[in-house]
Length: 454
Image (cartoon, rainbow, N blue to C red; front, side, top):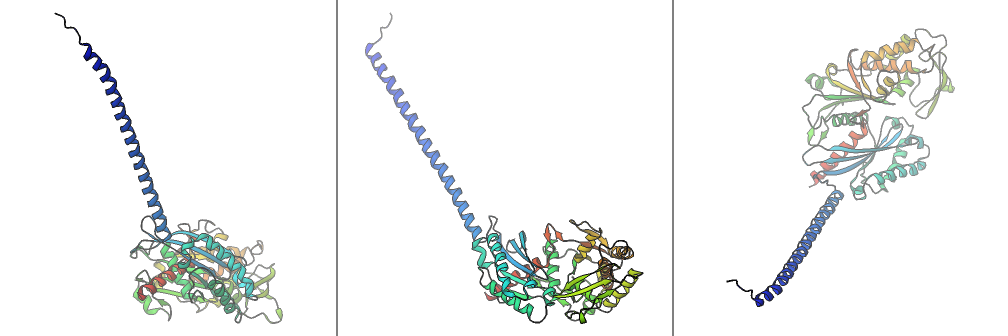
């Protein structure tokens, strides 16, 4: 018998189904809303955390720390030789390690600092302009901890009387008014030994030898306008025993002491050598303004040359023959018993820069931009050729004298003709200037003073 449906139940079901559907819909809406709110809150929490991390990282950077925990510091070094250049260096350093140079900027002082010797007040605006450049390069929060230093080299030594000291005193006054860290020793004239040591530190730093002290020795030759330097790390006891007085020094760099041989020869820089070869006297005008006529110049040459604020009239000798022999003889007289040589240097790796580099590039011995290697005898070969062709190629009237001088100077140092030299003006895209080594050593000495004071 077929069962008859109950109408009451049907009515209940018709009401119950929409109700259930409505409740489910409310639950879905509530879940979706809850999920959206939770996700949004999580998103903003992550964003705020990331923003906070970034802000904390920025704060750490302002305090001198990178995201990797490395300390950041800066240094400003004015190279006040015959010309003037301001170098700005940025370093990073992880405690216990060796600093790394991360950025370098430099700006030339035009004209050079020595140009203000007769009126030191005129130097103020030009120095202030360079300091303004430094302020743009270095973040504000680092100004008070960034050392500002000027080192003058042999070029300023050649200024007559008290001109150099008056000029340096004016620079110190301008430095004291700057926002940077300025000590009592912020302005000074370097002796030649310090210049050699600073250049050696630059080479060692840029070749990463400071990070691996047991590596092979890398040493340096520098030829400036007024002086020349040679600095190396002796490995033979005999070198230490036979070194002239004052040539051995022991700089301390990041808790390691290096016993160096460093010798400087004031008066044997290229420009001072010119004067000696031509028969002049440093700092003294020629009597009656007479012309220095010498056979070491191109026969047709006649002109003026200024050195240490003195103008000389010079000319070649028209009837000169065997120019290379005459020049070599005169240079040998100037260099006789002037420099010390050691046997050990023959086996060392030397980098040579400044005028060594410039003259080698000028005559095509090395690439003008990249530098290169040559043997000492290459200077002699090219010198002989230039001297022999001076009559037919008078465009470079002093080149015969320049190349002859460099050739014989290297031989006087004890380098054999087959000794290989590396001529560089940059290592790892950084200029091989003594300024880097000087500021590096200065900052390290400041850290040492702070450590001893604690």
